[in-house]
Length: 110
Figure 1 (tube, rainbow, N blue to C red):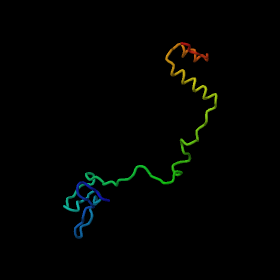
Figure 2: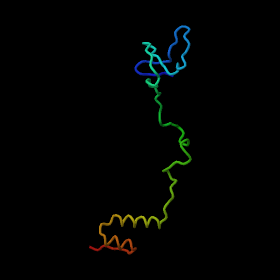
Figure 3: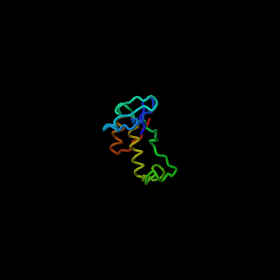
Figure 4: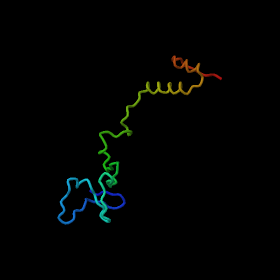
């Protein structure tokens, strides 16, 4: 594992027949200048990774593909009701809106 400030840090280097201290794993040493740092001051260098897994197979994404032709078709009655609701929403006159909500057929004569 490499630790990094501005230089490359590695494990503390033991000289000659020096035995590792009980806290040897809590220290790291700069490989170029030899300065010793406590591990809690060193930041671990992370590797850049894609956060999105790319795949060439479209069937790997899931069980269903959304938006092609897997939607439930509306019946003529449902379409007629939707057109009526849209007409009520688009109407500006409150009296006409009220009559349309009651189910009355409205013909505007100017």
